[in-house]
Structures are given as structure tokens and as C-alpha cells.
Length: 144
Image (tube, rainbow, N blue to C red; front, side, top):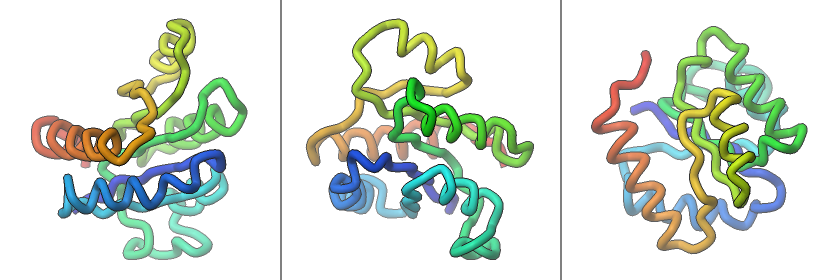
């Protein structure tokens, strides 16, 4: 099974437990992999550092960015994914607290596949996990 690769921004480190619990209950067959920085994202995608070898960093089925694309870290994360020939076709979902239409438009213009209001509670994380599993892994056809 292809894992869900989730880049959590530093502001929301406490949400790792919520996300882990939600995915384990809503999508128990999905492995959730967390990276904490663009550097870790690069290491995972390049199978280097603590992610050396394909078994330590299997190809994700989907990438979820919990970073603002209006900030340098978010822009760099998206550039990292979209510039890598092996990963640029993978679906990229962005979680955000942005409320302005312009930010939503800019996010889609940057090449993401979905803009999602950032979950704040366990129930919202559960709905997100269930939705990702139900649509992206069971209905949509993902690139190999």
C-alpha cells in the first residue's frame, strides 16, 4: 500500500497525534508518514539521510502539505515535489487556514490538486482521513 506523506508545519506539531489516530481508525490500511521540514521532505523523496533505501521511503500515493503556500517553506515544498520527475504527477493536497479567495486561487495556480480547510479537531481529521482514503485511494486512479 502506498503511504500518505504528510508534511506538518512547525506550528501544528501537536496535531500529529490527532492525524495518526484519525488515519488509523478511518483508513487503517494507509501508512501515514510524517516529515517536519522541506529538508526532510527532500530526504524522503530522494531516499537519503534517515530515509535511505526504498523500504525506508516507499513511493507515496499522495502528498499532503500542511504549510502555507504564501510562506517560503510552503512554496519550496511544492517546488520540490513539482520539480521532481518521479513525483510531480502525484496528487498534492494543501491544508490551510487561509480564508481569502485569492489564496485559494494562488494555491490551485501553483499546481495543487485540492485546497482543504485545515482540520482542527479529531472529528475533522477523521473526515479528512476518510475522504482521502475513499476518494484518492479507492475511486481515483493514481499514477504509478
